[in-house]
Length: 388
Image (cartoon, rainbow, N blue to C red):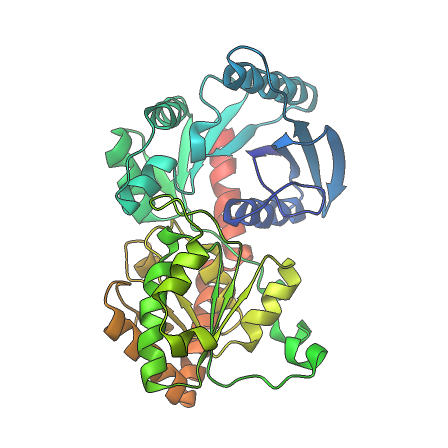
């Protein structure tokens, strides 16, 4: 079977950017390629046109072109025509695209179109309580209404999206998956060894974009509470800083402004690093803290759990489909600063419980969200589409 993916991001040095969607696309693409599917990934918005192969996946970079008039429309048509020529030549059975920005609005492909709900702009605006641009909502609605099939990475995202866009289509739930072998801690070189520094036994880690919707500003207040009771605790923020959408200022600076004098001394911010380096930071953390307000089914959570780390996370919607409170870590609402901090402190002070939660977290990923299991689910679903 020949399957294609359309995306704006994909983890590779030749690709301009990548985040959670790109990682989930790559995990699935490689897993299907290993099952002898012919997989093609089209990455739009790139700096040049190029075709290359990695891990059995053929990757097409599609150069961004700005047109004088209605550029959004004509660039979409450029993408559509490029892909349709490939579809006809290679007998592609179906193509998958994300819901974000409704990129497939006004595109017509010569094969079955699947849209996977990773979280649309409308979805995240709703969770964050901010107004969405009408244009973005319109494109996303047109794209969803014109899809032949819809998959969602979580039940919560499916229900929320159905309400937001008044969808009537049946939505298949297939969670994101992760390659457990890639996150084998025995294969990871510890940062402490490469830098000759001792690993702090009270080390908190947040990794991901430094942005309001991921609960970063709440984390500042939470960290203040932790420092009050455990002054030697450190916090590492690992990720790119962005301008806050409400205050139009650096989110990192807003974060620092909320910290106590003592907490500021215990903070380290590290900008973007390679994917392999991220694994080392996760490996060295005592507790991973992810107090997000808006996710669909976050890859960061899967990655930390796959590495056997105890987490303290938010308890909103999608979280209950991934975490088990009191078993793989703790869940708490990010605005409950004291309660959130107390749960972190419990895991810092109780090493045995911390270890048990980490073991449980890794087992949960292995038994429910490994790419082998999720790959099989996707494979069966795509075969059912083709048979129909």
